[in-house]
Every structure is written in C-alpha cells, then in structure tokens.
Image (tube, rainbow, N blue to C red; front, side):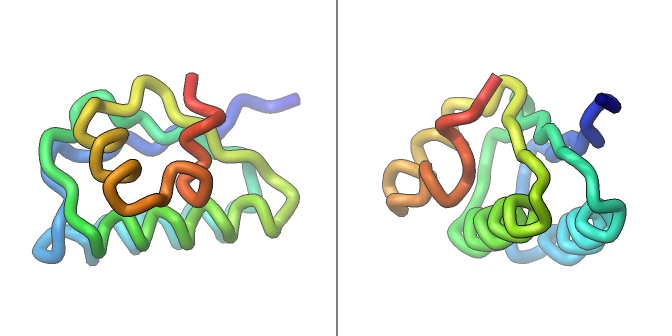
Length: 95
C-alpha cells in the first residue's frame, strides 16, 4: 500500500485564502489516492473553509479512498464541533 498524499494546511484558512486551498484539494481528488491532512498549524479557520474540507472528505470517501488527519489543531476541532461537522470532516479518523 502506498503512502497517503499529504496536504499541509496553512495557519489561516478563510474566504481570502480558500481559492488556493480549493485548487490543492481538487488536485488531490484527481490523483485518486488516500489523503492525510496536516492540520497542526491551523490557527484560524472559517465556516467556508470547513465546508470546503467537508466536501473534500466526502469526495475522497466516495472514490473509495481514505482521509485522515495528522494532529488537527484545537481550532479545527473547536470549529468543527461548533458547526457539527466532525463526522463530515473525518475527524474521528484523526492521527
């Protein structure tokens, strides 16, 4: 089994930075591979970014691949819980 594709999330993910993240996530989907999100550096994340990540997780799973988190930051966990997106974001599978 090959190593998952790793995507390191930036410290701030919001409406002004979401375009670059979407491009990176779309590229990952096109590779049809397992993915690890490195979320330790995330200090600020908004609702739009969390929704994008939830859709990304859904696409990865729909393609038969897995998405895992490597050290998601407290901010990621808090915002996901506030929005009720823990399951949609695959946070139960965090590393």
